[in-house]
Amino acid sequence: MRRMVFVLLAAVLALPGVALAAGKTHRLVLQVSDNDAEKMNAVLNVAANVSRHYAAVGDEVEIVIVAFNAGLHMLRADTSPVKARLESFAPGMPNVTFQACGNTMEAMKRREDKEIPILPAAKIVPAGIVTLIDLSEKGWVIVRP
Image 1 (cartoon, helix red, strand yellow):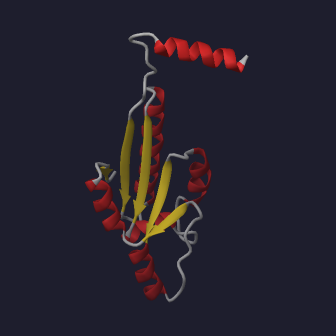
Image 2 (spheres, rainbow, N blue to C red; image 1 turned 180 degrees about the horizontal axis):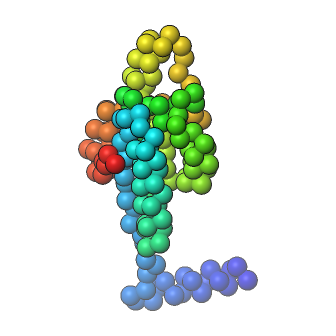
C-alpha cells in the first residue's frame, strides 16, 4: 500500500506545473534586557503569536529569545518571575530557543558571590549582544517588545 501511494505521489509530481507548496522559513530574535515580568510575558506572548500565525499559513518560524543585562533574570532558576510559564512554554514550542548571556552571568556571579543557576531550557552564549549582531548579519529580524 505504501509503495502504491509513493508511486502515485511521484507520478503526480512528475506532471507539468505540479509542485508541493514549500513554506517559507522566518527568523526572529526577541531581546530581553529588563528585569520586568510584564516585558518577559510580552516576549513569550509575541513568540507564541508569531508561531501560531506562521503555522496557520504553512510557513516555518525559528525564534530565539536572547536575555542579557537585567533581562537575564528571565532565565535564572532562582529569580525568574516567569519560571512557571517558561517550564510549560518551552516543551510546547520546539521552534523557540532561549539564550542566556555568559558575560551577564559572570558579572552577576561576581556581584552576588555565587553561581548563577540558569533554567534547563536555556543555552549559555558568550555574549548576548554579539549573538544579536551575528544573527542580524545573517538576516534575522530583531525585536525588543
